Image (cartoon, rainbow, N blue to C red; front, side):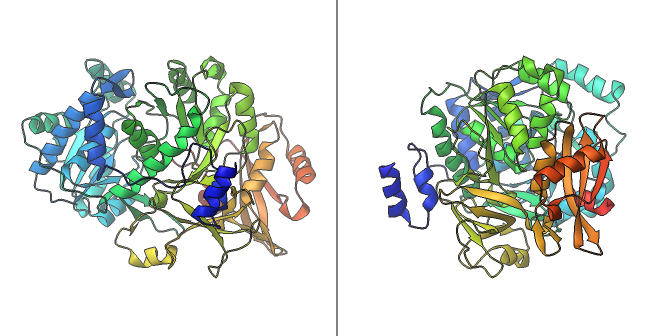
Amino acid sequence: MQEQDARATAASPAKIWLASYPPVVPAEIEPSRDTSLSDVLEASCKRHAARIAFTSMGRDMTYGDLDEKSRAIAAWLQSIGLARGDRVAVMMPNVLQNPVAVYAILRAGFVVVNINPLYTPRELEYQLDDSGAKAIFVLENFARTLQQAVAKTKAKHIVVTAMGDLLGLKGHLVNFVVRKVKKMVPAWSLPGHVSFRAALQKGAGLPLAPAGRGGSDVAFLQYTGGTTGISKGAALTHANLIANRDQILLWLRACFIDRPQPEVLRFVCALPLYHIFALTVNSLMGISVGGHNVLIANPRDIPAFTREMARYRFHIFPGLNTLFNAMMNCPDFGKIDFSQMLLVLGGGMAVQRPVAERWFERTGISITEGYGLSETSPVATANRFDSRSFTGSIGLPLPSTELAIRDDLGRDVGLGEIGEICIRGPQVMAGYWQRPDETLRVMTQDGFFRTGDMGFMSEDGYTRIVDRKKDMILVSGFNVYPNEIEEVAAMLPGVLEAAAIGVPDEHSGEAVKLFIVKKDPALTEEALRAHCAANLTNYKRPRHIEFRTELPKSPVGKILRKELRGAA
């Protein structure tokens, strides 16, 4: 500990979190040998050619396969007249074609635009138009959406793939079931499109020129609402993502303080690869260490997902509070073998203590909470990976990351005082795509990114989030944070899910409204009010309670308070 204290003082007296670092983790990352993400992929594919990189629906793809297929698609992309730096969109769930397309785009020297496959035509048109994407890869299940949006965009090159395209002989059966039995593919027409298989065949015989991209070049446009309601593309450079990979890998060292590292790390990839959390923590980190990612195409089918989990012994499982909660309510949850699990990482939304405690009771593994945003590639802070307990905090800033808590005037507040969390580090985006005004709004003059999240830092350097700045409820002049209300509600055994918002009130300005999904059908409003009265001071107690059969969620399972506010 004396060595850690000295390290903290030597680095900067303000970086109090360094004294809480694991002894095996340095304060700073080293300059990376990798200059681009294509370098990362090519080196790993060469080193681990025979290893399994991804598995989907029982079909394995080795690093050698990934190298061959992404190279062919990259060569085909270069042959259709795109220029370096052009944007290419990917609109697919977690199927094998997703990483092939993403790494092909990077190897060809272009920019990946990740798109949520569940977008409406209006949302898709906006993102294609804003990014200026000239080509798009789409799963046929969503081709009809593209058909309704593409005419007003610059996307003139369309590659359509089917669910079973890379599943071998099994793929024919999968495509038949998806198309004819489950009827998951609405009729579509995209004149001039190319099939994924045709692009593979054509590209296999074409030369591939060097990508010619460096660390400062944009690699991904990750669209996010950010701190305002306008969807903006966070421009993430190759250097941003490589730095975040290196920061996470250094933090991962703590997992092996008292146990050996497995030869091959196996990851659960239940979060969609088009989301920044899975993109970095699963795909990029997995490829960098020669790991094996098991892709889950539909994690909302909890029984099927749980059965898939039971087939393997996993080491790393990134997920969300809602996913962990839903899994524990599945009858087959007890069949999952957690004996090899090194890390269950919670992010995307606050992990509720009742969920974390129940998870530990059931599995013997603690949920390690981290924190980040699309704008930070994404991971900015995390609890120690060698911790055996749930802290309720978002942990410590990762190596080479600085965190400041500031008031509305941009001044640092004292320890224990609530303010806006601001982040500076090599993983912070280059800015919002073609929106310098929005970039100026969130970047401070001294290089910190204003997250829009409110929190406070304790004397040991750990930070706790109280809520999003825009979600804060003002009751008679008092700040009420929905996260606290939701966590208290979740303590009641009869509650499955909870969400709190502020609604107008003529007496107090705003009042708390609580939405509840029951786990126990016998749960009553009276019991819920009594529970809240016993655990919350008067102004924090929900004035309105509404029971629902389900809550609106994003594709990754994050509860959407915005939609609840719109319906309230």
